[in-house]
Amino acid sequence: MARGREDVTGAARIPLNDYGVLGEPPAPGEWTPTLTVSVVIPAYRAERTLPLTLASLARQTYPAHLMEVVVVDDGERPMEPPAESSAQSSAGPLPERLRVVRPRGGAWGRASACAAGAEAAEGEVILYLDADLVLFPEHVEAQMRWHHLADYLVVLGHLRFVPGIDEIPASEVLAAVEAGAVPKLFSEEDATPQWTERRWDQTDDLRTAGFSAFSVMVGATASLPACLLRAAGGLDGSLVLGEDTELGYRLAQAGAVFVPDRRSRCWHLGRSTVMRREPDVKRHNWPHLAERVPSFRWLRRHPHRTYLVPYVEVVVEVGDASFEEVRATVDAVLAGRLPDVRVTVVGPWGRLGGGRRDPLGDPSLDLRLVLACYQGEPRVRFREAVPDDCFPMPFRFHCPPGWVPSRGTIGAVVKHADRQRLGIVSLALDEREDGRVVHARLERTAAMSRARHCAGPGDDLGDLVHEMYGTVWDAGDKWGFLPATLAATTAPPVPGRAVTDATGEAGGVRAARRSRRQGRSGARPLRRTARLLRRRLRVLVRPA
Picture 1 (spheres, rainbow, N blue to C red):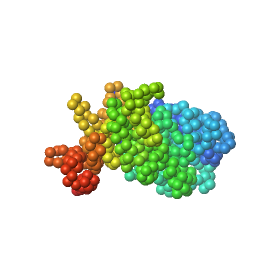
Picture 2 (picture 1 turned 90 degrees about the horizontal axis):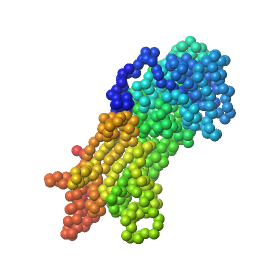
Picture 3 (picture 1 turned 135 degrees about the vertical axis):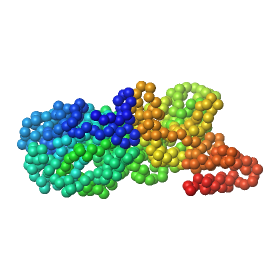
Picture 4 (picture 1 turned 60 degrees about the vertical axis):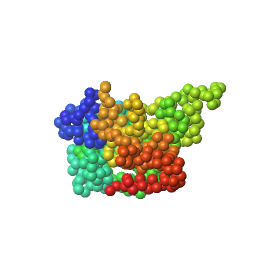
């Protein structure tokens, strides 16, 4: 069985979404499966189509002893349970291991049903199926081949839309299942492709889709390791539509790779809700996805709004910094052009007792002032230590106190990371006498999650991110950073390119010195000087 490069834990290191490093999976029937799979089917008013789906599951090539089927009855009233045996029923054959469960506590909707099915499932892999599919015999096996190659893959099946059972008798479908002739039921040319197939064609089956691969996840037929599903938090039961896209986004942040398999084929009986009512579906889904999927920037056009899931978490570790230094950094972040950020200020807040103290001579005065300064700011939170990650936010930006980003800095660095497909961007700000480099650092959550998953003893996460995504170091002044002491007297440079003079002095520092010098001499007003400098900088950094 072909494999990609692996670390000592056996976790294949896949760059971005290019699962081609795994090699070709074994052909169906030419390998020995070992993983167990739970097929979870949410069923709502599916009495006419569910028996056909179950019949096609009973004729799968994947070993029956490794496969169970969990039907989640999401109807208002409990359905009549199928006979719990593999014997022939009046509706057709049934899988050997079949259970029917109900969602808990009155929960309803596909997301809640899928969550209930995953909770009841015992398999190492969860395969979600809609209750109106008729599977080709190799459908399950084709997807499971990939899960034996790597344990952080989300595999997407291939479906085509065909007439519903109002146009083709159920008995004809069952006869085709029994005869092993499901592929001959309909012509591929006459069936309607799913919209995702166009994206597969455009991106070499998602190998070149990069960070957007998750957006084509459709829950009609999709499988993933149960542990990956738990790591991503499962499906969001508060959503009644669009839950598969939202789950795909969180799976991506957990480090998942998305693999479409064209050999995992099935017929979808009848048209989907999206095909029948696309404008209504979009009108319903977009407000929910705008709150939960920061990567859909086109849904977040408001210049001042914040959202349920912010785009970037900015971490400021107080350390021994003064209140003024921390405030300068946090205020600059909050004033930036990117509104949907969350600032986490890290410090020893637990040591701030409430007893009597000298208010002006308190050794913890600076900490108290930082806490007091942002008590009413909903975008700022306080933590004792840096959290392990910022999941499900897609980016974390570490910014040392006392350094001030320009209004466009964070957004520009994020765009640069996306364009260059980078996992980490480090910006050098200063070099101390002891040789330590003070720097800011942008981390991509998906890259860090995958690095943690693939890391073995002694592995450096930064090295793994560099291998699978790419990392880069750059000068901080190029991206609009200035020390707080200089930022108070000058406008920071435009992010994206450092401006230096013949001596190599950075433009932001030179502008600050010039502004102070001209202010002392009275040659021209400081405000006019700043305006002229900004105009000159825009000319200098304009692309050729």
